[in-house]
Length: 198
Image 1 (cartoon, one colour):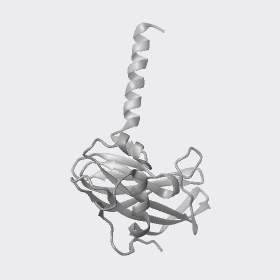
Image 2: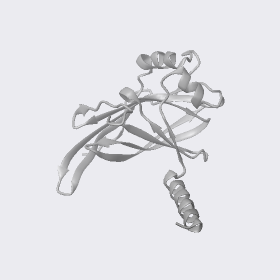
Image 3: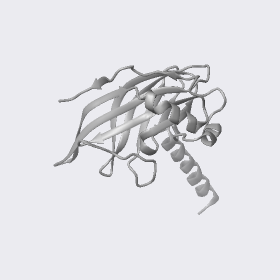
């Protein structure tokens, strides 16, 4: 291979990698104070909550391992902060360090029978500039799947956000080394159904 051919291959490889990377950032879930210190730049706030997936009437066991059922929330900054793909961790819990601003969870994706499924969402939350942790609730997605002639058929049965801060917040913040006295809750106060398909 000539020097020119090698250079062309290197340039094309770099362009392909850049194209695949897109414009989004992937945020792994933060589950302890050490990870929080590495992920935060000082002006970020911790945004945390839980995602529950129910497939065909059974709650899926979520984890972040290679062969586990994984899930991600696609977060879009409303003021040009870009797109973040927030990974959901063990037992559906998540925590990410995000810059102050208004955000929208535009989509949720998860594994189902070896395929990656994605459903649209329109949940909004705000991250204050004061650096306080923000609890955004337990997001619950119930879906039904069956095998059709052309692959998997799926439907969203129920989709809502629930405020479980009374039972979750103290334990989660303690694991992150944060105080529960200075935090904000940015979820609907009562169970609220967001979508239903019959």
